Length: 385
Ligand code: NZQ
Ligand code: ZN
Image (cartoon, rainbow, N blue to C red):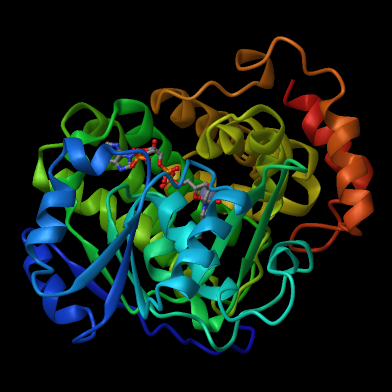
């Protein structure tokens, strides 16, 4: 097993009615920036619940953080935090709002042009504005990790950043909030979380036996509850298992002491930046091709996955191949289209564009063995057409 440090200071407050604790979780006397998205929190009553539980606090609202949040929008909030001397931020929303708040939190005291946080991938280790979250969409794990993804609208670049100062102080995760989610977002949540596990699991056989078993437990739970929760989000047993699986998929735990990949995400982010395709759907497009092109590197782990998750039998090669088909089948069950042509009419220059972007950024070898070279990236994207 590889050496590791496990640091996760987020106070995760999980379950029905936990919103009542909001007032005691926010520091006493704080002046709060309440940040949210396009308005779903007004329709489902979450905005009202937040306000009712923050009586006595001074609150400044910042609305309109879009899905795949824009640097340009977030910089408006950075200005407000400075002008209004805000000392705590509350993110109420899904991954986009939470990620947006992570950027705001890190950018306010950043010495230099905050765009560098994205373009130079600056690690934010100190001087961040403290923030908490009320999660409204299980998917990204952003509620319990220190990473985020922000899009620079002007250049259409979707870039990841993070740092140890960007863990939420607390996150309120009430599974009943998923009842107002459209089916499409529930499907996205399941597939995003599933792929997070795969990025940290589907590498090569290693000595992290416990990490593998936890990862497999999350995959099995998502396969079990995923299709059902989309049809019955009011079922608390399904909703709570779905929400907890999403958090566990990307709170750092299963990545400790083992190799990880993340190339599916890196390529997928480009498809969102270019075409606006939902994050999870880009993963469903790229992952099967990536597993196929990188078959020789991944076949040991694909075979383990096929045996333990889908109970497949045969030679390791046969099982590994069939495991990719089973994954595609699961994505289809979750309402995903798995080819780029299902989303876009014109896509012929996609692979070359992505390769040139990766080349400019010096991303010449992605994946657990840094062997997803630019020619492999091209083959993966072309296979996804
Ligand atoms: O903006 P509002 O009106 O709130 O509507 C949102 C948005 O349109 C809506 N929504 C959220 N909660 C709802 C709801 N509608 C009804 N009822 C509710 N309870 O859902 C839409 C999508 O929200 P968004 O936050 O964009 O979705 P998600 O949580 O899937 O986040 C996606 C973003 O997270 C990034 C992705 O790249 C993408 O930008 N990721 C962040 C990660 C991280 N921080 O660790 C890892 C992930 O791999 C991912 O890259
Ligand atoms: Zn993701």
